[in-house]
Length: 248
Image 1 (cartoon, helix red, strand yellow):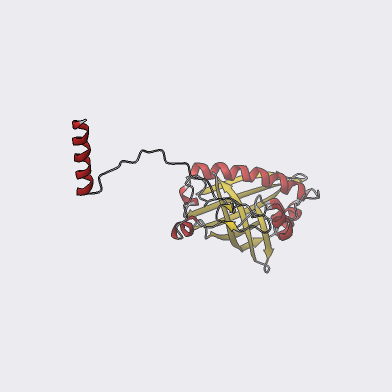
Image 2: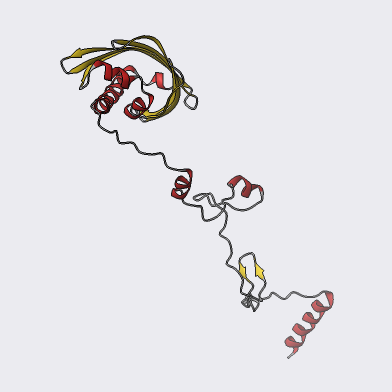
């Protein structure tokens, strides 16, 4: 994909070139650039975090200056990779600077190739996001070339990040473990039965709470009991009773 544009910067070409080659300035001006260091005269490395069409990528990159004609032109080759997204990019860029009165006209041309999930987003989406990033970069870079201090937000310390995350009230047991142990798991919450309240001092605890001091009373069974003859003797007595009633 071919990209290109130009913009004015309120500084002379020498100042513009100096800022372009300064890693700290570029890290502060490029949207989403969280790290950038200059390894040697022609090599840089860093990390870029940004979002394209609700896809957040976190790519480490390395850049090499392949041609330098200060303060008029510089060519660079950049390779980046986000292993989580299985995506990579290659950027071949040419940047030119020419005087324009008291300012400078900066032009750039880039050939960008993307692979993986980022490459499947589509050219129109990538062009739109690139235009947004360019506007943000030009505004920040113009302030840097004019000598204005750039507002930087320091990264939070690990202690601050830990404090911002609420601690869980208890240790959750995986549902699979509960099923394996024969415990019923609530389908809505994925949790087992609630823990029983503690038993008062001196009383034994049960699975459902403190032990009761008295045994529960079972209601009386009011179902009538059917009586049946015990055997031949009972049948004989019944016959005799009928005969006696017939004589009377």
